[in-house]
Amino acid sequence: MLPNSYCPIKTHTKGLVEDDLIQMMRKQQELKGLKGVGCKAVYGGMALICSNRLSPGKISHTYGGKLVCGVAYSADASDNDTGKWVESDKQAILDLFKPATPVPFVFEPNLRRGRWWKNVWNLPFSGISVSMGGITVDRIVNDPSLRKLAYKVIDETIAIANADMGKHACSEDEFLGEETRDEMMTLSDNMGPYNPSTMLDLHARKPMEVKYLFRKAVDRADDLGVECPHLEAIVCHIEAHQRHHNLY
Image (cartoon, rainbow, N blue to C red; front, side, top):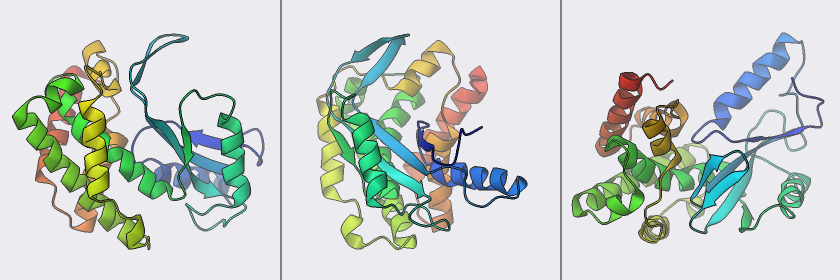
């Protein structure tokens, strides 16, 4: 239950979650005989900072990076569109994180692009880590076969991303390209033995984020007619781990 229509919401679930979240919120409002989604704004955040929660109040932060956030919905921009925002939405989230973050915090004007940008890391590196039964990032980048596979998944992810952005009228200037490919591999080369959070969930036999982090990307590719055989094989392995260990 939201406290009032002026409440902003920031989603913390990984992956392509905002479309379903906003649709769910709209349906809840319709059941009440109301319009909109019932809040001032919905934000989505992406963190590329190599942090793991060891225990309540204790965080292991092993490598720098940045926090990125964009707007999924703004009541002030348009009630019938998602992803549009007004300057006050941007300023509100910047003000919120200004006193709190020790790492760079960046506003992403296009949240759809931001989600795919983060997926260019999540899908190959978290994906291969879990698919292999739970290995650290250094073992992926230092193994020639796994490094080659990571590049294959990166390329497939960028292809899906650009097709998705093109479908939603994004300009080609916003498309992902070689710079994103190189950025994610360079980051991974310098992470050392980082444990992706989904890999930690697998080892601890805790529920894993699979639907929105992994499967949604493959479903989106199918809808767009983009082939992603390497990514799909990895996602099938991850789903098998989830079923085998009942990690729902």
